[in-house]
Length: 290
Image 1: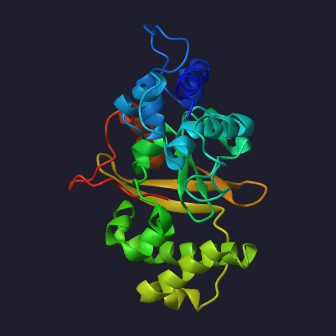
Image 2: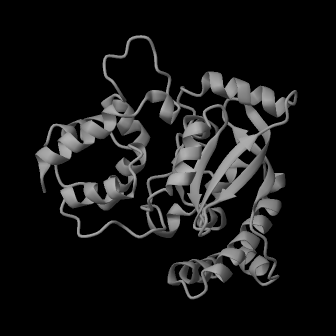
């Protein structure tokens, strides 16, 4: 592993990103040309101390998950992402889907421009890849888990805590939408072992899922009305829009409300309190999302 070159490469990529590119305030007293170290760490879901050690040319070899998170935080293109892996002696970048996926540049470019509304990029199995600060304020950060547990759809049917993001009276609707969407994904990815294993696991662990799966309803979720339970602002009613990548493996989700509505007013409040730590519920757990 080339510690010195990795440190120099990370700093060079950090220096070129303006705070406004990633939805952060510029502020009047910045003494660095791009992002601060702690801001990169925050965007990548790492501790500031850990990232600082990497930029100082020290520390252990980063995992594939950490490298993928850094590639997203630093807005690396495909060649730069590959170079990052090569500097750490990784034989190849991770798979093109799952929580280590490289966000497709077109979706990431659009996300960078959505600074006044909550937005995030997810996989077709509802694994959060990257989100802007307002999405984190609205929905919370994704839990630090791997495998099927990284999928919000999987957690929805196996972990009751995942459902606290929506009012109980809306749960049946979201269950139907998630299952119909997953069936459409399974058809498009026919023969894909990852999808087959998820469906099999959900059928074993959730009678609700098994019953809905057997209805054979199918519909990709493109637009949906959501009522989201926020720990400070209460229930916020929003429209959730989806833009699909060309191969359908990733989606840009953004949330909006018609001007003059209560939802629009609460989004305005969210932009004011969005820099505060609103990602934990009353028990201190991270809030799930999709």
